Length: 224
Image (cartoon, rainbow, N blue to C red; front, side, top):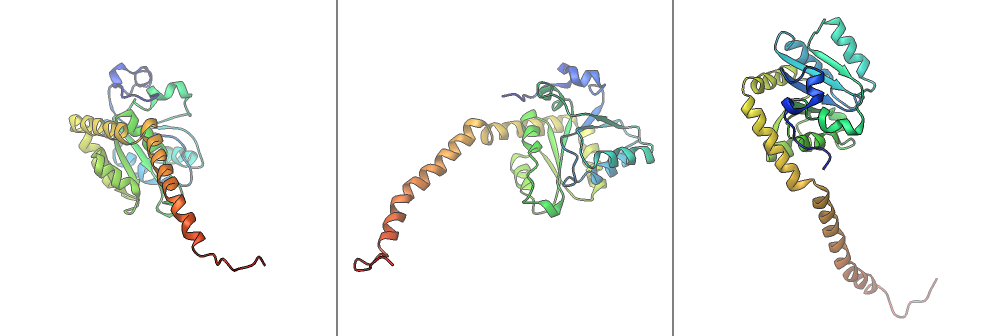
């Protein structure tokens, strides 16, 4: 697999950007209109005086809005980087202590934050900013790999970040559980077997459905 857990102390990307010596919160991917970055920025503002670094890797419609927020509020704890090449992802995605995933309530069910699975693969703790009915909450609860934060609850996100910062072992344990859950549920082999199972069930049901359809035909009927 391309993405494997990696300690920041053994990660050139983390060291290059000075992330190996501070608690790092990472948002990596599209910063688009469907993503709740407002809650993230609110948390960054609340934690501006803490030893916490927010790293944003990517671009999108909300990227300039986030940069403007940082400038207006004179935040010194945010770093913006461009999208990284594929070969760098094993290092950029693991250069943090907490990964962020966010989605706005109005697009729940229409947009799937694919970055979530990369975060699981990276073996980092995860904070998902999402609606109460989001499917992300079920996975996080089952995997015990992080926390779900309500949209707009910047204070709740900030509190969770501080909780992990003050208890690194908890963050590490969450990351390990997330990676294990990924290996048990989302590897290529696992997904292929699930597709095979669905196809097999459909194939087994097809003859019965065909017989059912034939039972509704009248032998004396004539073509129209």
